[in-house]
Length: 127
Image (cartoon, rainbow, N blue to C red; front, side, top):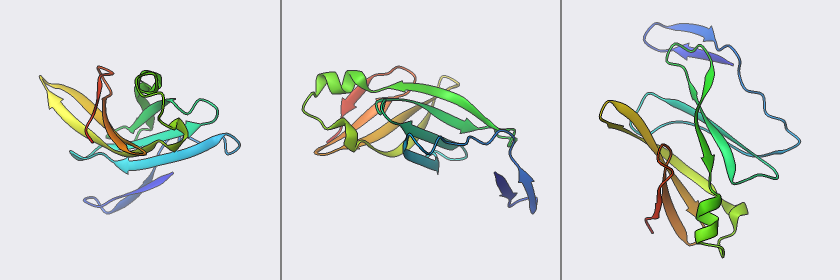
C-alpha cells in the first residue's frame, strides 16, 4: 500500500499491508476515525461475523497494528431478534479520557443504532 503525505509532498509505502482472504471476506471498512488523524481498517470474515479486529495505521506509516479485538456476541444475546448478518459499521468515534485513547464503534443493525465502547466492551442502544 502506498500513501501520499500532503505536508511533505512525498509518496511512501506502508510495510505489512493486510491482504484479505478474498474467499472468506464478508466486508471491509477503511476510514479515518472521527476525532481525526487515525486510519482504521476492519475486515469481517465468514463465518464469524460478530468477532473481528480493528487495525490502526501507525502514525509513522510503519504498518498496521491491532488496536482492538471486538466480540459483538453479547449484543446479539441481548437482542436475539437482530439479524447479525446485516451489521453495518457507521464509524469509529475517538475519545480522549485521562490521557488514554478510547474509541466507540457506532453500529447500524436494521431498526437500531448501537454504540459499542471498544475498550470497556460496554454497549447501549442510541436509536
